[in-house]
Length: 210
Image 1: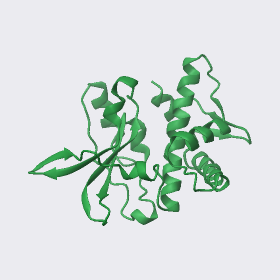
Image 2: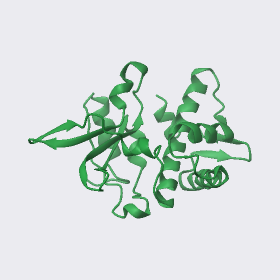
Image 3: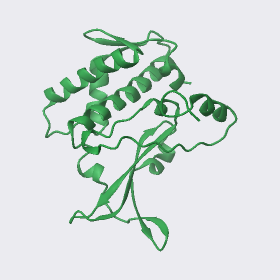
Image 4: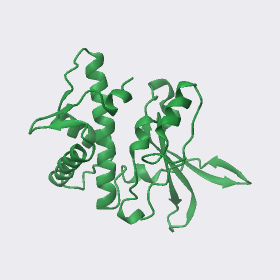
């Protein structure tokens, strides 16, 4: 079945409306060193996005797979442990968790390894953060779609795991501002000025908030 983007959105919505659980396998790009980019629009309609990556021991031998929940729309305090990053290995034909394994993402606080991945992860973080903040504001009765750029930056810097203290905050801010401008141009879902981002109504952020 062929459709615009990386998956047939009409089919996705039809199955969702019928209450049918869906699992979509999406390859993120063949050139990992350039950021592993790919069409990310499929994520907008998904409740959960899981990224799998090799898990190496200290000698750089792969001993398992690290599973990171990059999107957790249904996460709540009561089920937070379910969404925690996990490390698994194949034992006797069955996948099992590696007890005591420290996820690579926690070792490096989620810091990407290349400029390409920093850009792609920052864009994904902007989408999630804007959607979350806009939803909270609308629930509080603010429907103007106006979100201070500094609030978005602070949320991503402090909570996304992309920024690391070994990096220059000024350089990370430049990446953040460039990603904002690129997303506005590429997707047209919000307006920008020097201080604020304004969500345009009737776009994907509305779909995320319902």
